[in-house]
Image (cartoon, rainbow, N blue to C red; front, side, top):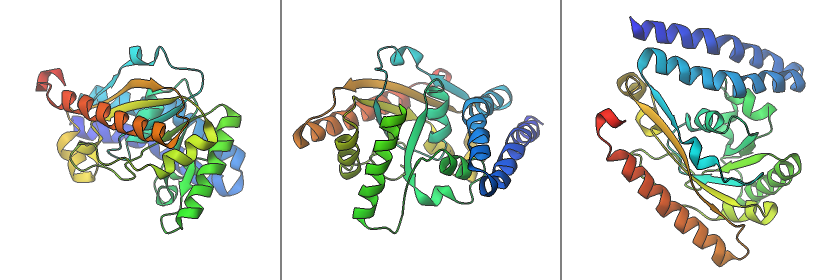
Length: 253
């Protein structure tokens, strides 16, 4: 019964906004941007509230960890699922966040695709050359810096299958850092790998959870050596945090 109620509530919340944005985007980018803003500020938190109410799916927001954040910064995080996007929007709902993502997400994903395009997130061509990707990063960095937005990069480049943190690649991070010159904030998230596809959603949504936490704020790295140290330490800290979360007992999750 609760499964049916959950699905009905999610459809009632998602379908109107998703449909309206699909129709609005080709007509007016301004209209689509307004709808996308509603999706980010209102709908993303509402979706987590629905999941909590009917499936006991918890969103653990470690708000204390955000207290010492500077005005503008550059986030790097591990990556587990498409749900990482609304999770970060929910966690940083008071900020104007922008993601670096592969351009296949900008097509045919309800609620997400038009929002990513109309809000000018950085969509990297999957089949483009490295030079094209770096140019996209550079242009994106200049825009978010001017607009006071918060860029979010997943240095793994792909989603993990087991929740553990993969290798952090440096190229995109270095290009953004060269453009932004902002403090770097390492964030850990967990829970997405358990609901990364339809089968896992059906099995693991009930009594599941998502966690997002700020771990450390680094000064903007000045050299390639500094950049490598920030990436290495960030990956280590994130893996330690994820391992700690995975060790929690079921009733603590």
